[in-house]
Length: 403
Image (cartoon, rainbow, N blue to C red; front, top):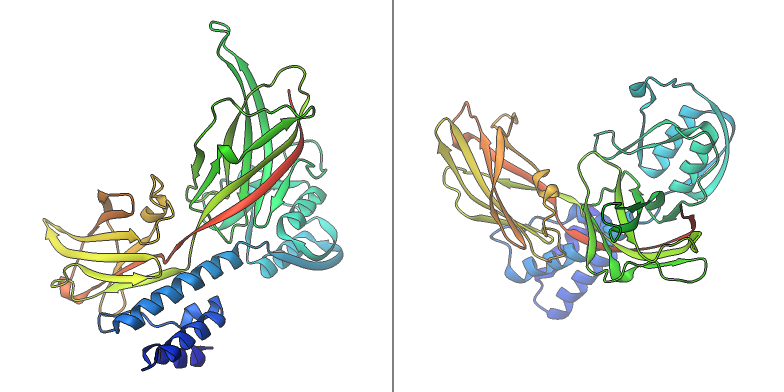
């Protein structure tokens, strides 16, 4: 594939429009794996080649995100197989990292024998079956990015939860419904449902958006349980080191005639990070407003200056195809990796950073460094997703008991 991509990239600058269009289409047809072999856009890159490479990257990043958003599948037949071996097989086949967290809570981490028969079984379906068989459950707050922890189940039953529904990489579980009445002001009363949304740990969303006008909530009599006047969107930013979020849904019209939520249907929007790209800047003592673009992300290295005993690297990050990725959800930007690389490959990590600018599509950051060499000896390295993908996710839950 590397040779094919290289050959077609050369033709992006052909003399004829027909040949340039053909080369662009051929690279796209190679699929998202060709992203690994696309050249970096440099100041010397021809304008049309640059535009075509950026367009190709945007299309292939979307294809990569769509592929990643499909459920992983597990195929395994085993009888009385040690539990750790089954977990290892799931990890190998799906790319999802699972960690045993039982000892962190003083629980017995025994190696139970399990029997499974999975043929192209979706990840969440296989894991829920395995956990029910072994008396385990997911623990979503391990504090480690890209992993799913598990612990001994707290409930007394080892049955699969019938209320759980999955949609590709996402798992939806209603976990709690609460009704309240303010006794000092009886007009203040209401009902809320806690909806836990988890995802396969190999893909961590940036933010989950739940438009209220896309929700359909009905009791067993067909009566709507949507709170009057509900509008806007419930947006939940995903914090580093968690594998699920809790969304609190307000319910309306719930009274003693309603025994259950017969149907809860909606369409969530998940913002997913694309492939992580590396932006490298050198000649730091002279660099001023140097731009590099990968896909839909533009990084501007403004300057590298001394400030007392430290050096500050000023950087601007701009999202070119605005997907709402910076609408008060900037945790992913703050988690982007930044460091200096010395002449012998040694790494100098940041001593801190601060936000210097904020706009609807742009964030400015100042990274602090303590140096033992001259600034000219270093390169500044910045790593960021090259795109932010908006993924619609439909879900439907049924027969949720009301208190």
